[in-house]
Image (cartoon, rainbow, N blue to C red):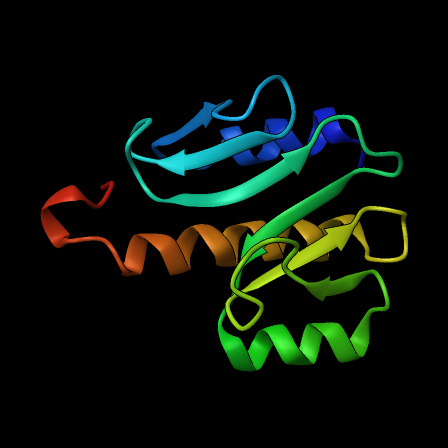
Length: 117
């Protein structure tokens, strides 16, 4: 997946909003609006593209062991975030699953009144 495809998939998640708090790159995806919690960070200018995603700590470790392209989150809580280099070594379907998992982790941590339907 290229950075445009990654961003499009993140934006397709329910209640996802794209934000650019640090300039044109990276694109930050949040749940529920610009003040909502972030679930993905896509580096628009990296080649190959990179995406940082929230993850269950046990799953994060398993993904790092399974894929050299998955490393602890860059400038993020290394226990809860992974950075994935989208170099083709992680199948697109698995990368989409990682995005979905990140979104689900963030939504589960939100107050029920703010969760998307």
